[in-house]
Image (cartoon, rainbow, N blue to C red; front, side, top):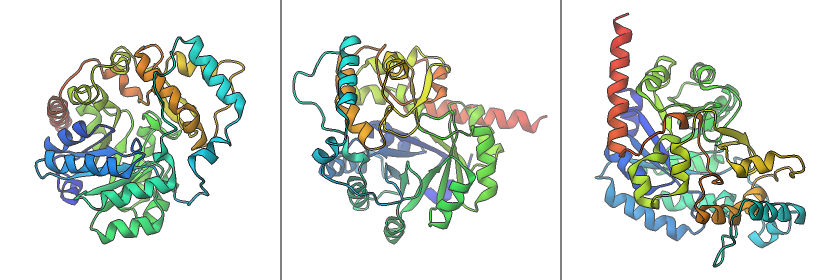
Length: 362
């Protein structure tokens, strides 16, 4: 199974996998896809550099990419402590009361001051570090990066991808110089729009003249074949890698994976409580608390992330599957066992070929 995307990215199979785990990203690349490492968790560019050094050594010379979170318009930013002053005390009180009610203990040591990777300046440092490594692709979760960033990537021979939830967004991305558009449907985990993948993908394919990746609700070969039938040159998968053995290897057994393995496709919710922008999360007691009467409205990005960063640390360490806060798409209903990246990729390719053969016989 090859499309023009394979030649463009130098990969064997038109499957791009986004993940916050370098172990998963490297395994995806070794299996013939393109592993894309999410950079938002790195507050320190030096830490990202170390991880990309590890990627260079563990991808068998095969291509990989990175994903940053960078708005196209440069916002006015202050230091993290100044941003913290913009968070209303009532929001902080609500978070603390909720954690106590849910039985989430305080941290033994210091928590995070916020994941600064959501800040524009930090995202730019991620790009600078990435361009010092042999990355093949820089993807931006918030659409087009600033044009000077796109130009800088192109000067280094690196392709740029941008996520789009509407055809008009895709056209704007391409006009800015983006090379690949990720059409991400409503079903997807994390930041996502309001149009379903089945409707969105052909709209985006018809709107632009660059390769389009289908994203949202993809976890089987039948869905990969459907994406190709809709005109996409490949797929972009994120949630499905969260229950891989390599993810367990990198983070250890966790309540998060336990919660995902027990969830159905109905157990997600689209909300602004994670970052301040609409994102699909696993539905838990934490999300329910924010939806209850009397809960405050989420703050805009990046203030919401700064508000809940320590809470997410506490929730993670509490190791309670009923409370976890995790972005995941509706495909979670098919994430019912821990498998290696190699086995996931093999099953995807096998079922895609079987589906296409069945369609040819109709």
